[in-house]
Image 1 (cartoon, rainbow, N blue to C red):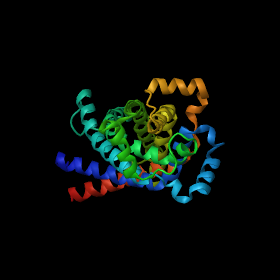
Image 2 (image 1 turned 120 degrees about the vertical axis):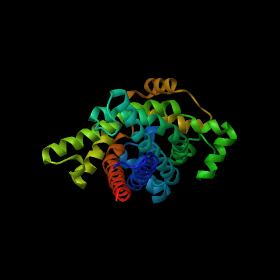
Image 3 (image 1 turned 60 degrees about the vertical axis):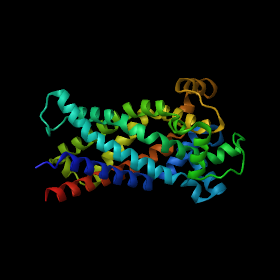
Image 4 (image 1 turned 135 degrees about the horizontal axis):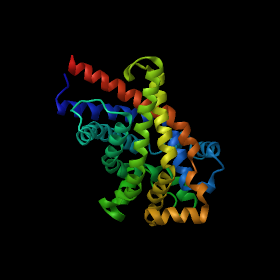
Length: 303
């Protein structure tokens, strides 16, 4: 018997939050390297140079800069994403003329994930802005774009945004975030479900019985497909959110065209290496934590 819709929503929200926590803990240093390389591509020769330089200049803590807003961002994003994902599956069932609770195809689940991402993007943008600014603060000071010696804490960044732009300042980069999320999460959920279906078919079981390693691989594969599809958009988003700290706030298309004209198309893929390295452990941990915690809560409620 299916749980009450409110209980189901709480379970999806909680499982998404647990998954988001696992994702950040397992992948934060790689995310820091990604943001640094996206916003200052000429400062680093590659991923290892960025990683080692950051460690030498500001220590291990520099690689975990922005972890607090990253945790808040990922917990919020994934909690809202998976809560919305469950609801959007019902919307897809309704539009497809299916009964409530009917199984969806992998393509239909991908569509539900894409629709759900609109809600998660709105929840994600403010904390993502704070995270990106903290991660790139050292480079902003080194290039003279902001004054040296500024306090670099979550609260100091929040106060600066509120003072200069007001509450709406936290939504700088929202357009590029939504443009990234809609196709990105179609690929994310589609690739994840397709990969699980393939494992289940070859193993002669259902999706829930494929085991931990295939489940984590499916999550990592979904994450890899997401980033390969939308990485240039994410690069533009990071530039907008970081450079607006220095007072420059150009829109999505102006920023995109400016990067292509002055730095070349390859600059849009700066930082892709740490992102792809990060995606398998981080997204594998995300789906492992989500699926197992959701199953546990569903079994507890059902029992």
